[in-house]
Length: 184
Image (cartoon, rainbow, N blue to C red; front, side):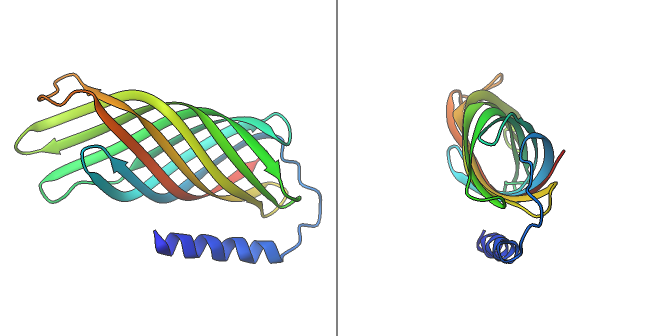
């Protein structure tokens, strides 16, 4: 996570020192991807690589709607495979600092899934719904290309059809990621 933070700050500093020649239009559709660190907190805490895809529509400079999907790599140990993922749909509120930089916040609903595969208990799928919220900073590189550093959290309760005695597990899935998107 420290390496990702250093890389993100370095990229933002480089782009902050360059001038964007034309006024950027921050409205309309956008689509992008992200790479970061995903953390699953259920009964314990597991950390691993998180991959994401996001897209949305900005109605004006300060309001938009965004869909965000992020999934993990294997979060388990040598005995257990654990995977996690979320899909969130949120309104997004943006404050334009200048033509290049903006900060945003979002809150909405999300679905969550955690899959475990273990030789002793077998396979177990946990699903549920919860709340999603996130904050971040966005930097316009060109008129259409943007990078962003964001922190998203989905929190809720997971249930399993087969349970193995483990129903209603309070879960937080967070993702700290560096993303890049194209603004149409």
